[in-house]
Structure formats: C-alpha cells, structure tokens
Length: 268
Image 1 (tube, rainbow, N blue to C red):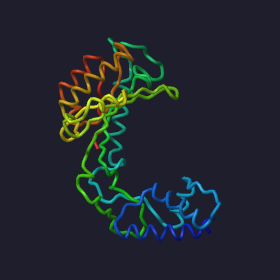
Image 2 (cartoon, one colour; image 1 turned 60 degrees about the vertical axis):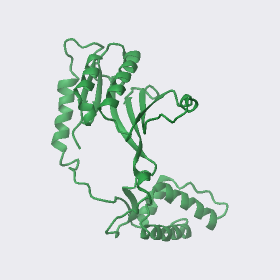
Image 3 (spheres, rainbow, N blue to C red; image 1 turned 45 degrees about the horizontal axis):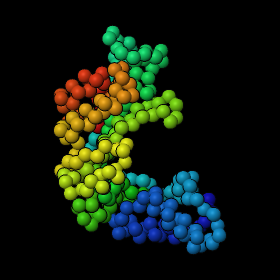
Image 4 (cartoon, rainbow, N blue to C red; image 1 turned 90 degrees about the vertical axis):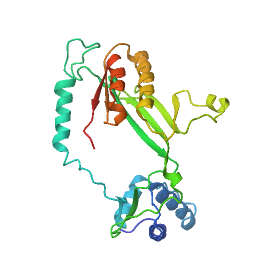
C-alpha cells in the first residue's frame, strides 16, 4: 500500500541505492536518521519517529533485506541442533541436580543454580569502526560488499570488553563484572586520567587488546574476589565459550578453588 510519507521514502530509497553503489554500509541508524531529515525537508511541522514498525514496513515495501557481506563457513543452528539438545540435557540432568558437597541452597525448580548464581562470560571486540560485516541492501544485490574504512588501523581491535553477567529473578537484580582490555602498555597514560576511569570497570593493557592466558588469569583472580563478596563460598555456575584462555588449566583451577563450576557452550 502507499506509504504515508511517499516522497520521503522515494528519496531515501534513491539515497540508499547511491550509498550501496559506492559500497558503503547502510545501517538502521542511517536509515532512521535520513528518514527523519527527509520528513523535515518534505513535510515541515510533521512529527515522525522512524519507529521499528515504520522501518519494517519500509523494508517490505522496497524489498530490502539485512544481509551479511560474506558467507561464513560454519554450521547453522539446525545443523547443530542435536549437539545443542545434548548440551541442554547435560545441564538439566548432570549439572543442576543436587550433588553431595554442594554449598548453597537447592531450589526445587532451578536446582543447584538459581538465576542469580548463573553467570555468562564473554568478550566483545571493540575497534574504532564497528560492524562492517553486514548491511541493509536490496534483494537483487548479488554481491553484497561493504567498502573498507579507509585505514586498516580503524578496524583493528583497540579494546576488548570482557564481561561477566548473571541472570536474575527480578528486574534490577542482575550483577555484572566488566574488564576493559586496552591495546598497548598504558605506560604513557597519566595518573590523573587513570583516576577518572569508571570505578565499576577494571582497566588492563595488552599489546593487541587480547584476552590471552596471562590476562585471563588476572581477570579470573579478580572475579573470584567479586564472587566471594556476592556469594561467599557458595557454588555458582559460569557458562562460557572454549576460548583458549578460558580452557587454560591454571584459569580453571582458579575458578574451581572458589567453587565456580565452568561449563562450556557448544562450539560455533
């Protein structure tokens, strides 16, 4: 059906075509930002929020899809379905049921580990230019490509956020522990700048901003202190991927000595 802001959508579609022709990425932020600007231009005084609903309908009207720029050779969720089901079965029947020697209350529904005692651990790489691997584009775009950022240094990892976060039975009860691993040595940063860091974020330095084994041992040691402050000697569950630093025996020993059970997810 005809769009309410037809002139805006026609112009936005042409701008998007030109942007994709140049190989530039089209994000939802860009679409919303340009839509609002064009409404102001074509329909002065009109109120337009560029809502999720509008974006969905705009994409459907103009045959736009959100697509990856390259095919990644990995198994789909359907191909891994059996492994995923087996993983959940092991959690349910091997991890959650009561075990002799368990320290902490046993919940009749959640078992040994209620939501507040289930933590997830993961890393988020943070370059200066983020997420160039996908874009909004047209259905007939056979070769989805996004032009480079112009400098390789802009897409290199500059920081890694290493995050622990638990579930919670009620809103606002979740707890988190955040480390920020910065690229470099940190030797040229002034004491005044370091004093301005957010006290809830633990800043570390590594030449390539990687969570290697040495950095992970430091993180594990500090997380143990956080765990003891919040859960004492009680057992908690820590779910993570099989990053080399996570699988390191010394790291696993640090967690085990603090009654932290590490459980690895299905490999990607």
